[in-house]
Length: 198
Image (cartoon, rainbow, N blue to C red; front, top):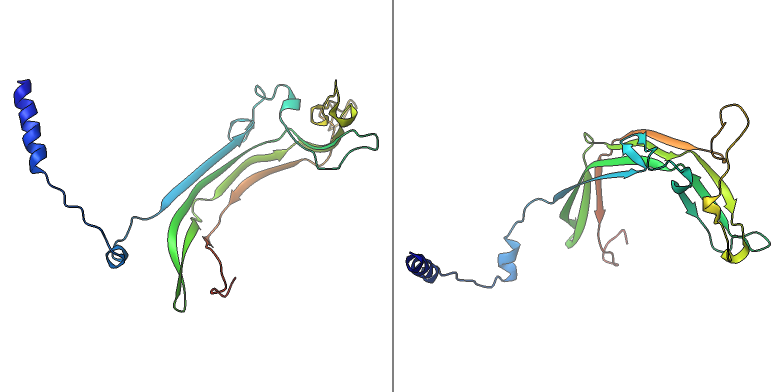
C-alpha cells in the first residue's frame, strides 16, 4: 500500500511543471495589489477593564506612577528632582486606522507615499485617561548615593479632612473621558526639492 502511495505522489509531482518568468517594469506596472491593512490598538494602563482603575495592581499607589527626571535639574545640594504623575491610568482604544500605499501626483512627478486614513464612524475612545495628581519630588540622597529613595517613590498623603483627605500629595489632576472622531487622511512621503511642499 505504501509503495502505491509513494509511486502515485511521484507521478503527480513529475507531471506538475511551473514556468517562472521574470517580470519587467511594464509588466509590474500592470499588477495591482490588495487594499492596505486595517490596524486597531487598545492600550490599557493600570485598569482592570476599560475605565476602571485596578486597585489590586495598584494596591501600593507608589508603583502606579510615571516619574520624569530632566537633565541638570537638582537641588543646590545635588539631590535629583522628579516630575511625578501619580495614579496614572487609562484606556485608549483606536478602533481602526487604515494603512495604504498611494501615489502623490504633482504635475508629472509621482511620489510613493504611506497613507493613514481614519473612519469617523469608529472614533478613538478615551476612558479615564490621566492621573490623580502631579508633583515635584526630590531624592533623599545627593547624586543618587547609597541608601537613596528616589523622588518618584516618595510617599505622603493629605491628613486634613476634606476633599483631598488620604489622597497622595500633589496638584492638578487630569481625567479624560470621551470619543475623538477623526476624518481624513495623513500622507507620509520622502521629500526633496522636486515637490512644492519640501
